[in-house]
Length: 399
Ligand code: HGY
Ligand code: MN
Ligand code: MN
Image 1 (cartoon, helix red, strand yellow):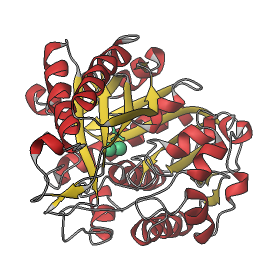
Image 2: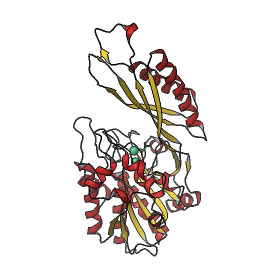
Image 3: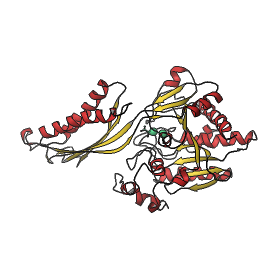
């Protein structure tokens, strides 16, 4: 079945009527439906399916063995995300198996499809949760205690979905099964449009971190409290949002975003008592993300003091710059007949795995260049070209 048709099969799962696009988060109904869909698709193809201790789903073509060629991505989305970020890589992996089987290919190396849990961190806040747990990059106790906006812990959500959260943790046995990992992903930018190419390989991922700024002041009445008597945490929060943009604009190739801000209690006629905001900061180069965040944190402290508020700043996740395995990338490039190599500012599970196994990425053209929004897109002809390209790469690596 073509990747485009597979995507159409799940096109109605997790639509978000309020935000637009899709909201599919770890172990919520939509993501569980997609997990079930993947397990059924794999079962229909005779792939042996097992879910590892961290909730990542493996589908084996042949007997599970060390050193396998593994390909996959994720099924969860950001809130109000697009249809392709994650599912395109999963659908293309399934379609690539069909393409290889149709041409009578049988792998001489073990080959597996892999779907990672909570790549976006959209529910529990830590991106690439499944691959970080698998590789030991995230402490299992910390993971179990992560809470969503309803206060539900990851352990509770995973248990409700039938997993045993006590088993979370580094899984060297599963990691040793991966000889190399290839992730196909919709491009999150306009590179392939500008270069007029349907696919590209991935060269690198820039460093990125997530930081929680918690401001506390004095809740009060919006009408009865004079300005001079206020300790309004929304003011230092506003200063941070503006400072993030200023600092990133002033630094080479830096990005800083505040996309999420939660005032408590959040009443129109109420001065907030606390305001939490999350900074997403990404700067290539050792130490540069931390330096950018330090500058922004200084603004937060000064603005909080001026308003008689307090602030705490917590790093919630950080990943260093990643350069993908160049011999693997060159091998992919040769098979694809010479395609662009794209750096990216978007994080991926392949980026987490790259520290442990040869990892590579294959990007598919996105005519809007927009991602993490409903306008994210890939044309059916490029979607299918991507799946054929992935099949060629898998044939080269597992043939
Ligand atoms: O945030 C990212 O870069 C990725 O989409 N998780
Ligand atoms: Mn994403
Ligand atoms: Mn993604």
